[in-house]
Image 1 (spheres, helix red, strand yellow):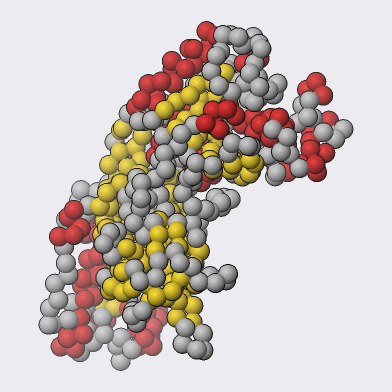
Image 2 (image 1 turned 180 degrees about the vertical axis):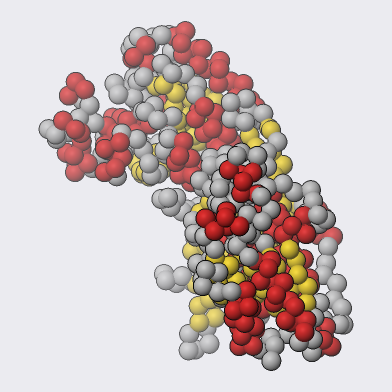
Length: 622
């Protein structure tokens, strides 16, 4: 995903706009025509677009205008825009940054990137095809990203003989979509990007249209400047030197600040005063939004990367739970209860979707109930974080109100979010400290707590081995408890089924239960299929790596089916038991378990001995 250009807030002489629409609606051609007719194309780009190679020329000898924007070879070969292409140009009236965003549904994430910094969206519609599903999807994302000015560019009018009736029909179809999404203004323009009609020059082929050309509209559209924002600086790094200099470097994400101004550092809540604003060019009298600076404070305050320095009289909100819009970008679905990494500003957190409120039905524009988000879905959800962080609502500050979610196993960006509001209940909860803690509870039992996490296919022998280990530990006088998959589903998790979302919630509850038992000083044996690596990683993180032992009971699927102690594989093979792990639901083997027990090579007693030896090496037993 290409990074969006950084910079300050919108200004009267600078306009950021995106082009978006369905595949082959002519987005790149439109930008190429705009640049070509405005005579702002570098000579080398123009030479490439007009060379004799027929693969890079449009019909009729017209230069391939799309080539002026489509910089990736793969885009040229496929004829679609994949990445976000940014272009800068200027006229006598205004400066522009254009983002040419992908039209294909699978690149929705790139389109969201381009929209995140734009003031205006140019949404193209092929006059022959009319308003499509992608038109609705892109309009929804544009609205979520805070863009309130839309140009409905009805392109390829030359292919329908410049028919006014068709243009009016498309405009009428789009109007209720814009109203439903609360788009502030929609300017509808009939165009032919290929031939230049109404791009810069008025079209003589459409005398019935008396509105502005696209360039004239972009030059004159009034994009209101954001209201005065309070100061925000996300700390990127700490600058020190041998002389004792200590400064906090980052980008100003809102408002302005000057020496002497009082600030608050979050999440600590410590207050101080700005001493200097340092840059390579020298000290500044004031820093404003978009500038990268190093701030020094008059008071010695402990500040770390990920902290926020903010105006003391207008601090951001602090919470560990909030409601947000989510655009899902990954092929694997978003599952409530699964933990993801979150980047919010420069802070890195662990977050989970605690409740998916609804998903947007792209066709109808209505909200519908759902248990998960699929790729390119747009939803509204409650999120829970592992600690409280400072933020602003996205409507107030795009920079401090947006975040991305990252898969904990693959490290891929899987979602982007826009914060709506904090959840009030999050501010009413505090941790209650007790005198008797885990160490005291473990000491009275004369042991070290631990969680032994047995994972593997159904029938692999997890519960059998866990039972053998617990009997041996009990004989040694150790205090233990076993959490077994089937047993827990009779009580704590009896309300859950076997969909991926339910499996994630099943393990989440078991992780928290195991953690509480370990906090009580017990050696906990957890025997669950636990098919997903992400949830096993959650268990390791929540319990703590020093007390967590992952034991992979590795038995072939064929052997598990041969054993089939509960007849489950037989039911799964005949379709009576859907979503069964190993048959029609995936099992993700642990890449680096502490113990890998291949039951073809180990008897139950041998496996038990190996586990007890590991506990001795860890100092859990002697």
